[in-house]
Image 1 (tube, rainbow, N blue to C red):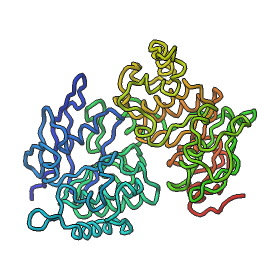
Image 2: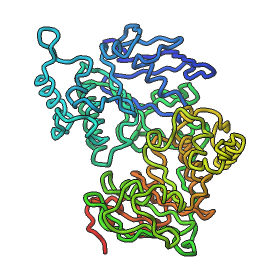
Image 3: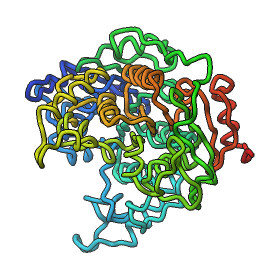
Image 4: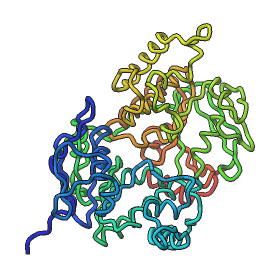
Length: 505
């Protein structure tokens, strides 16, 4: 019997934009029922390739074969009709519509050819949510009221509402805690058991080992390796293919002794009802303190409350022994606090503005003269900050939206360096950042701490907290259950604490 052709075969795909060749002869084949992982640094061409597959971009040259036949994917609708669904990292849901309306958007159940039957949509949506392991999500609830993890489940339900044979998942675990990742992998296993193929994109190489069958690696718009076995290919080989150099999974060397001096940041009895219990912590100049815990443990809420974006129910925040006005971002910034939030695109960056404006926006008073902005001084200061952090490209005139995830994060850090911040609050600093850029960010954060900055770090990745922080506070359900030097902890110990610990005194 002749072997079955691949479910999907993309051959010689090229795509250029003004001044950029995004794809340069990429080949990709995907078998029915497999998880094919797509790896590459930011800017390698992954997003462009999946947009070609989704029908959002038209290739300049190359062929696409679906079930052995040449096809042209002229639009996302054409791709969906073939059975190709794409779940993007930035979910394309309509927040003011219900779950059921989002799931069936564009192919609503009808009566007499034109009347939408809401009950039928809600019923079929409930069945899909049950299949996905989330029967608690109400089909009638507005999507904007759901958590990030629940919104992702809605996107998956929408994909399954079609007769889908291939699903592309772009960084699906980025906003999930370990239990939710386990559920995601269960869903993927069920799909592939039914013959559905999955193209899985992630920067987390440990996930690739766990869930993947084969791997294709992109670099500079080219497929530098295709069809590698996901579970047996050495990590060093994968990283070398992605970056063009060997990158060790090591963190910058931390100081051997605790930094001297009085705390620059002190938190006393800080709490918010329903989010986190009374908290005490201190961070000294030159010290990196990490908060480890599951999603929903109160980590981000703690950072936002310290920064003044949320008002505490009890307690206070002090900088150099002076209390800050509760719930005031302005007071926090004036005292020397800076926040790099989890959702940097939505909460920190002006995506349509230049790198210069994004770096200078918190320091505009420095460049104002008689009501006018000294553009030369603003540009000069931005250039210096960009150069200090090795941001690429080093042209501060380019729009920040054109930068990779790692360089966008550097732009946020440069803003606070220019401001003269003394306490840096980092919430998921490497989310959506490729492996090579992560190493650079780790080095930047460690260097800033070594130069006297106090850093409070939140990350969902326990190895990141343990590798970068000097001291770790472990959180469970809003309470600190353990505090220790990072070198005295390991990943298994932290996970045991967050799952089973009891509040510490």
